[in-house]
Image: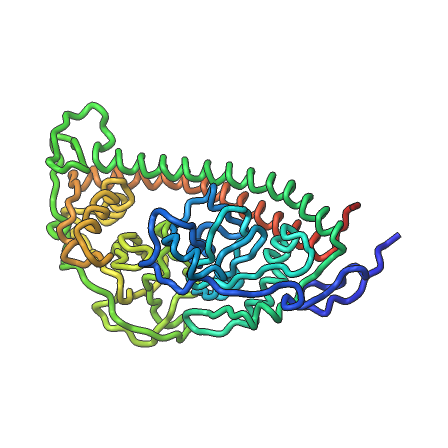
Length: 443
């Protein structure tokens, strides 16, 4: 016999069992806010403080400060800010997000140890008997999250307020069913998370192997029998006897150039693409090549040529590189990027690109940062980058070898990333089906 259903009245939840409640969060939770502090108030010891950064970047869904490492605040806040102290089962929402997708990000406090909600957070504490694990899964479902996303306001930063949260609708099965659902999801999602963690570990191993392969090849070459000499550079080590080391500026056909400070959002395939720092990801690829800004007029110096290498000057991807080839069509580069155009009689562009993917380059970048007060790598610093310089014929052979071998590794990584996304979609579907009553279990 089919369960009796009724309309939920909430977009995305659809029809729900007739014995389930639909209530605003305000009827089930009381709300508060985190400490009125800043990042500078955090320290390594004291009382754990869960900030909006922890929620966005590390501990979505749940957190236990006894296991998860977080920054702390001075114990004096135990007297002056007790309203921000957390209890087991509390929910902590980030009150701002840099994008719509992150609006509604939260964590479930899964500990009985003393801890504070930190800066830029909103707390929600159940004021009636509910299963907080069921609520956590409900908060993690797409229909609930979309209620928050559809209500936030902002341009570059989106604000999540108590009013928005209080107005969001909850689905509440009878308490025994809440507990049965959360127990089932804990078990099933735990298994899925284990599979995802194993796949992510495999991806990490493949990426480390790729970096090691690149590092070995651009510093030692392809001939394992060649005589070696000390490069004189600690992070490069020994190099083949017939290789040189040079500053990057001596391998360029023109000085390093900063991008143009252009802005706009006109889209027309007749116009050049503008590659921006936000388009370059941590994996040295364009984030979304099909949606880059297009401009009707571009100053000629900023147009790119096949083989140009771009460096991110600052931001989250600072130091990352991108190799531009003609397959991207007519393109230019914008501010916060630096262009390197090589003298191909000295330095092959594809070879230079692989140098920037090796661990030696990462070591150099870390050294530059350790000497700077601002996390910014300007043209003056890039021009002084020491690189290995084999004969150009050997550079071409190295680039061809790495193209082939790295493509194989990238294919394996892509397959595993696809499997990870499949498992995540399965998990999202599983949560949705049970927290909305599409699937029911005995309780």
